[in-house]
Amino acid sequence: MDDDSPTIVTEVIDSIAIVRFNRPTQRNPLSRETLQNLKRTTSSLFSRDDIRAVIFTGSGDVFASGANIRELAQLDEASALQFSQLGQKLFQSIADAKQITIAAVNGYCMGGGLDLALACDVRVAATTAVFSHPGPRLGIITGWGGTQRLPRTIQKAFALELLLTGRRINADDALRVGLVSRVSDDPLNTAMQIAREHQQTAARISARF
Image (cartoon, rainbow, N blue to C red; front, side, top):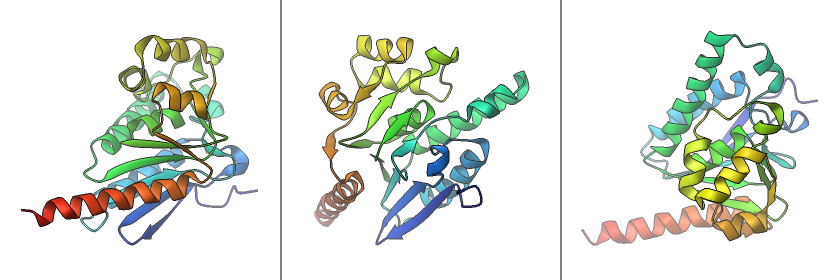
């Protein structure tokens, strides 16, 4: 059981921060507790000039499974709006970050987890990754920006199909439609390589001016 473990853990390697969702036995849900912890963590990281890249990844075979359905069932109109706005503002802060942000999708990437990945600049998928917005099958719709970002990232008609049917796609399909830029046996390592290549390119450009 990981009920007493931190919902997210962070480590910094050189100038690259790795933010890992850390509740694998619960499928790494983006609960209110997790979102609040993620907000504090990203706010701190994004304000640091020594951090040049932030990588988000999961644990076990799950990147993130989205909102906690049990929590959603207990929300009233006011708290549901507050919860939706928390996720929207948090993911927009990721999209607006001065650092390059990379989603290293190590497994299942569902609902709000996909919304988070879409807010990142770059997405790398494990060969076993699975992507879906399952809300239609639950009678709900994602409220954290995915309905806007997905059609802007991939072909609109295919995005609408995923949003309206809850269909799942694998890593190869995600690569084919442009949802991810790479598929890797080790997405975190690949994300680290991308972050380092970005830093080297930025350093060369800075050296010219």
